[in-house]
Length: 317
Image (tube, rainbow, N blue to C red; front, side):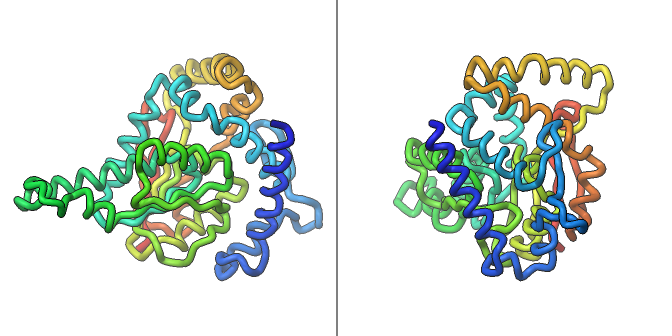
């Protein structure tokens, strides 16, 4: 395990360096060379937070990689345990709010285990079948030209994650489901996506953006890869609005979740970090401002369960 982790971190370092070279696609944008630089004006390595710790930006990137390498195999189980299964309802609702239609192209960033991608494909498949039935078409008659084939041919999701272990979990789930059409898996850095400009109708990131070092670079990249008219949507833990509820939630987060991590995943530290990282994420209104600064318009948010999580949305107009 230790050898595997060291190899993973080593590969991650080499990929991170590669993403920061002149050959990187996103070097075409103004933000990339400035916002991915890890040194401040004094020449010292820039500092950031890793949970409640202050670390260098380079160190944070490695630590986050290590966290998700460690939790990949138990990630879905822990999500169910920590939320009592509520995360599934949030993700279902997230896709409903996106409301993709057949033919939609989506990039789901930090989506390695495929939770959002599978929901997206299921949603557009159902939309295809319903449309065909409404038209009195072949899905209802069952003569081979089905809504299933329509959705497979016209809709596509690209799952992008920097962590190969998470992608491996997602690919395994896809094989188990027999879900190969309409999906591709890309190892890539959200701050410098290895894809071209104006490619996707929608960009989603669920419970991932708070772990990224340069949030403004991530948002700028989201804007770059979306088509004009495309939609950015983020599902993330946020700021609980009610003071009493916040106190109860904090007690649960700090006293229970790391213990669950130790019992279920034999990993206290990773889940201690995940709890702390939520508190470091900008509150709802501040995140709205950050999204607007990236160029998005009609930026809104919607709280879930009093702000435990929130859905932020914006459009590239």
